[in-house]
Image (tube, rainbow, N blue to C red; front, side, top):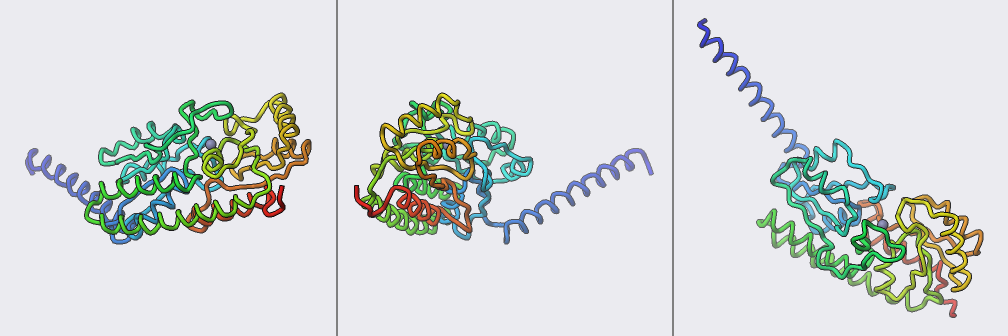
Amino acid sequence: MTRLAATAAILLTGAAVLLFQLVGCGRERAAAGEGGDRLLVVASIAPLADFVREVGGEHAEVEMLVAPGTSPHTFEPTPRQLELLSRAALLVLNGIGLEFWADDLVSAAQNPKLRAVRTADGLDIIRAGRGQGHQDVGNPHVWLDPICAIHQVEQIRDALIEVDPAEADVYHRNAEAYVGELRTLDAEIRGAVGTLSRREFVGQHAVWSYFARRYGLVEAGVIESTPGDEASPRELSELVGMMHDQNVTAIFVEPQLSQKAARIIAAETGAAIVELDPLGRPPDRGYLETMRANLRKMAHGLGQGEGP
Ligand SMILES: [Zn+2]
């Protein structure tokens, strides 16, 4: 064998190995996508993953980044999630600083085909003020107002159509059906809130601000002005004083954050601790179920039907 032939043989072997690896990858992707033609969509938080599932139906394979039981405010991406993003078609974000880690994650994923959509864009944002403290760009928890959620569902629909125009009709139909369910939820909340004997609550952090604005509840204060950061003893005693003055009788806490401070305040004021889940656990507990469970607990905590 000449030197040239030997070199060529080595190159060819290398090419064959490379080809084999490429084919191998292709098969893996097809298997992971059950048929291989489903869009891989990565959503930041559970409610958005649920919306993508509803609108994308069988055409979307949905993965979420912030796992159940954890908070987007303290989230750190894993290597597996980076790998997911390196081959995803769409990244669905809330925006308003909730995913303060998203830009770094997207650039690390090195996926030129990845499209990112910030679904809160275009909404009337509650600006960061006293007790908000989310990256100073505004309060990000828009999805807890079902009317804002409708806007987010429509943004997801449009983004899916952009990356997969062939299925535009399906995405339109699915979105329309789900928006109908969100309107039903909105009507249920209006009905339930109308019967409450009290409207004031203290939140663990400013998670229910949009809900309160929409339905006329009063977020009298929050325990953690920066989510995940414990309140100081001075802040806690101020909060207790305010609750006494304004006769606030309910504290809305979250399963994703520590409830230590809430228990201290409840002991001081006699207020009820009401655990509400701002995220849910799809597909077992999707957005609609989570919100209905929240509404029942909220109504119980604020004295439904007892009259003022
Ligand atoms: Zn938050």
